[in-house]
Image (cartoon, rainbow, N blue to C red):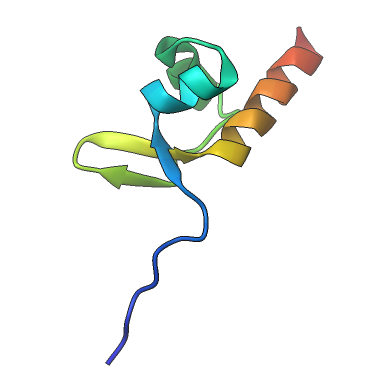
Amino acid sequence: MRTTQAPEYPLLTAAVAAVEVGVTPATIRKWVQLKHLRPAGRRGKAFLYRLEDVFAAERATRRHA
């Protein structure tokens, strides 16, 4: 019998991740579209993101700006 463990990192919706990084949820979606960020999971229809991935995407886009 296999048991699944909860991830060691919290998964956040685009809205929560955007607040943490200081951008809009539309910016999070744009980073996904530009392949700077990939969802780490889903909850219903909502994509979920790891906070460290969101911060990495934010740093990557600032370097290119």
